Image (cartoon, rainbow, N blue to C red; front, side):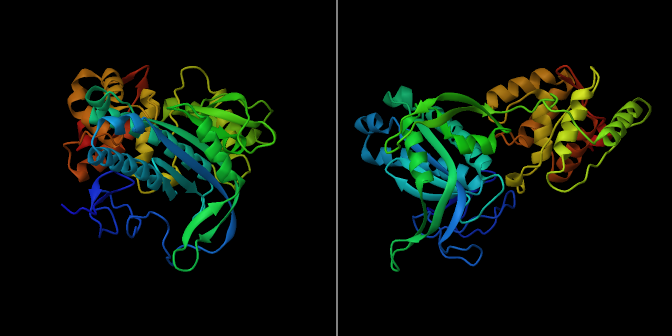
Length: 400
């Protein structure tokens, strides 16, 4: 086995060190040279000194010191190797940059050297993924029963302006970011309890529509002259169909057109409506208003094409399935299996349950071939009906 093998940030499968693309899902793999995960000089990104708005994530592992007292140094190193591999997988999945490792802590940056419009959302997705990965690590390695120790993460996330570029001289330059945002992220991490994710005001403002936050009392952080607003991340936000507090103005014709199409559904097999417009003109607001105005008995399924899931197979179908069964993004596999099984009609469980677990990217692999799987996913997404918690299986002809 190649000791330099690594994991794909998209599907999690082990791949060889020389692979440029994942042989299982086709996702591009980052080029990492040597033991350091710091950015190396490439033609694709600008590593020159720049001011950037980024989201900085600090994650500190707790419980490693008691574990180190009970195990051999080599065993501890193996545990930490699995831990850091899990952490880097989450960062790379959301296209962040691992800035540095400090002891058993990791610092990651989202927005440098490559920026995205949703870097704060990516950072918080990675943070929640890290918490799930550590919980799974405790179970997989059975640390509590074997060594009497349990690992946990304290995570802090801060968004704001930094200066990014190379530091360290010509011979050993490393790409990094500096600024008050970095210091604040580290202080927020120190203030978090084990298992918590604490974020600053700017990060919350950038990601409020995707996550649920609990406001904390302002924190007196080391080096800060004034208390800092802080929020605890509770999980992903399930988007509802509630109307906006302000009246919708100037969209009566578009809203009437959507309502008319909805009224025709009882006489037709289905309709596809496209809403096209420049960014910021109110497309999402129009959809929210339309959904909120629907009469009782109209069931809604909402799926989103996230920018960081471009290379994730069946990501949109998975989003629809989660909405259909009321599954959160971070549910563990036993919970997802139980919820899916309870929502499927008995004859469909044997075939559909492995398929849905496969689409949701759990360890269960579908027995269908890739060609049949693509066709089955398309037909299942098209024909599935939501009635309470019951889902009817699509016709066999559609599945073939």
